[in-house]
Image (cartoon, rainbow, N blue to C red; front, side):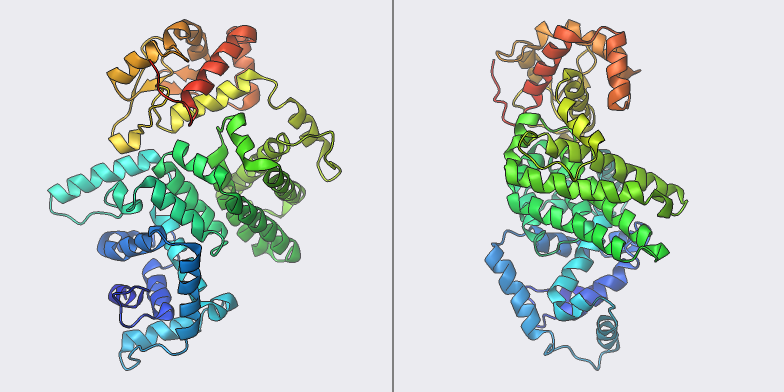
Length: 460
């Protein structure tokens, strides 16, 4: 099956392209597309996964993508596969039994959905997981054992972080599925959240597609409320959508304005549509721990981002009747407190693996090691001694003038050497107990915004 997938994938080198056979053979390799089912494919058939990643990250124009799709539609009933070969005949029977009618009408779409399902469960979703996997693969190679895909970061981003990530986003309008949003979230982390966040915010089509996806998920759930499985499918899909929103979790407010008024209005409405639905349907969610946890994450995420996107609009001119009064109240105060901005900035420094020297683009994933933190405040990480020295005397954000004030913040934010995870309310209360408020909070807020801004230029 792995061999047939490689021989039938759309490619100039393949004489017998057949998207039906390619999709069916990859589906067999992927099983039910769970992490456990894909272990054999990741260790025994890594070339198949390399082919999948290369296919979706290879630079193409939207016109080239459309030509690929049109060619697949035109040829899917007239493939040159040798049906006398048992494995080939089996693959075509699997393709014929696909319950998704859209895959029969558009076989190229069907192939891409299988590729996305396989990759979304195979690509590590955390920077630390990728680092552990790279170390494990190095040891496996040293001992002469099979490695687990992806062997290196380059296997996931073969055309470099920026080009690969931009190309994957181009496919979203074609493969408008929640599972794809989960894959994009994973790739955004591995590409570097500063880089990927800027690319996503600038992509207007990405956000219109996202709004369409979340509305469709809710509407399909609404149409099948009597089906007990409908709630399960909806929560799984909405959780994937929530992961995608987390690309913006610690975004600077000024950067977020790059979405534009039209996108902000559409996204606020779409997120509110989700929030209102899940708020009203909590009793329909089965009492399974993972589902309950995912449901809670969906509810919280879509509430926060309804508020976030709504805050980008002029509330005095917007029709607000569709929004819950709690959302309106939260929106009006969201950006009044510098402590909330401090909270999100610390999340970037602590969990995104970035360097705290303004303008430095180094990431822990790319360097393969954790960054040391300032010994004074214990909060700001640096990729090197050189960056730490430069940041100490930086012209726009000198760390020497803020380090002592941030030591108060470290008593709130750190437990040992690890960041404590707080809700916004808990963090505000803890900061006030330690005297991090008023002018001090505003100075720390302004400093952190400057050092993590993706447009910050280095300066001495």
